Image 1 (cartoon, rainbow over the protein chains, first blue to last red):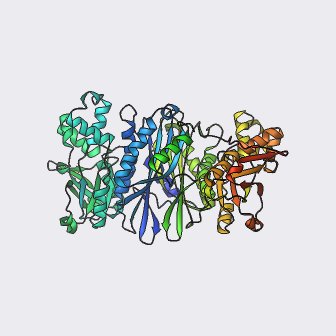
Image 2 (spheres, each protein chain N blue to C red):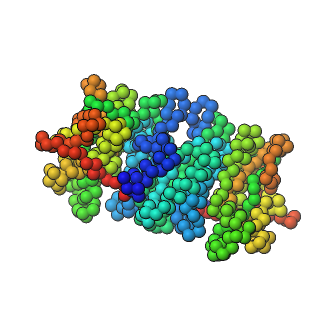
Image 3 (tube, rainbow over the protein chains, first blue to last red):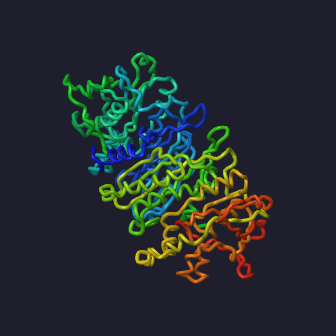
Length: 320
Length: 320
């Protein structure tokens, strides 16, 4: 692994300092005899993670909270508290940008019962940077981890895939503004600019002991399912024909391009979870799709498409 | 208060969203029946809060943790966990900057028994930004607040004042590099670049029920003692002649300039605390100085110098 890539650096730092609490979507900390606290931080930087010309401050505030709520969802936890650290250049302080940002943030916070407890504000020389921190709670020892998948478990995803990446492509190509009344454009932009964290489904899975592992799709399905395989030390076989490709993508892309976005596009903030086959019949939820099965590690990580098996290549977004 | 200043904005946001958990050095959260959790976040931005040409990455790592530990100290709490979010430009990722930064961070973490549990790393377009988050614990209901000072309480500070601001002046004037072997220069630079959080004294004060209120000196004595007066709804009378002016300042400044730095210079990360007079005799600690007394609110906030009383003006560092 490249020492100077983010994952390489983190893995290096982790082994050097023996950081065994670091590594899942959230850190899991002991709270009281019945409860674990889970906590996550997400740094969003202007012109790296978002562009001010592509979004509205209200939506950016919602997304800053949503990305961290999605990490809480990946643990099956219930969000409780949040902190928000913002470094903003002077022109934003002098406009109503931050008002609208906070209004968006709080609109999302209200939906999920999250209380703002602190954070920091600072001036920045030119770019906006946001650190979004969320605390959640889960029954002790029950938080969903990446490491719990076992051979034979079925692999599910929530919602549809590739929409956020499709929305990003529309923004990058400059097509978005002219076509924002188009129903598909609107839906793809919403996936990119105002994603929904899957807290409710995640809480249902945890409280009914349905998931053996879970992760949220931030980097892209192929990369995130790999994270489960690595942490669980298992293989997987994915059925490409079952992937719930966002139907809006087909207005702008060939079926092959759309599948590529669904497999490798990031930021859908849907969940991937695994479930032991004996529990599958209890899964009384809509909007879930079975996309594959966990295998023994020596079977490798595979994808089947039109009857052909090939290696699944983690090609999602890398932060570097 | 200026709506577009940071304090004005925060006060506006707090009243708008009814954020009563926000406002002290740390948020205080219920953890278990015996324990409160306190948590703080500090955002440090390149060329606003530090300059890379003035410090070393190892020292910056230590300071990033120390500023948050100082907030934990202000609550009398014991630090336990930390998170670190970093947005760094590509040239820093490609050097050993972050290695040295983490090494410094961990050297400070080891001193105070803090475990790194998470955070985030991101690329940034040009400037380095760091969000430092620390969690501490205090016996339930015992965390030291800004709001506990009562008329008649005595006002103490730890250590000496003005040194960090003096060090900053040396860096700004370009005198630091040429004179770093000078004992006074070294000491002032250390106060600015490698401050010590007053965790041990703070824990002693809490566990012996000695402090009625506390705050750390980040903005400057005059401003921070004002924060106690505002939150406690009291007045104060400060004896300027008692302020423990950092003796190294006198090599570079007149006595008047040195007193100004001690009164209004930020970032000493010493503590101001108040103590009921009946408890004062139990204060078996060195390196503490009595600098004034808490008065009734209608007595105002005053400073006495050479026998003259005048209004104490909060003239410390404002973040904007």
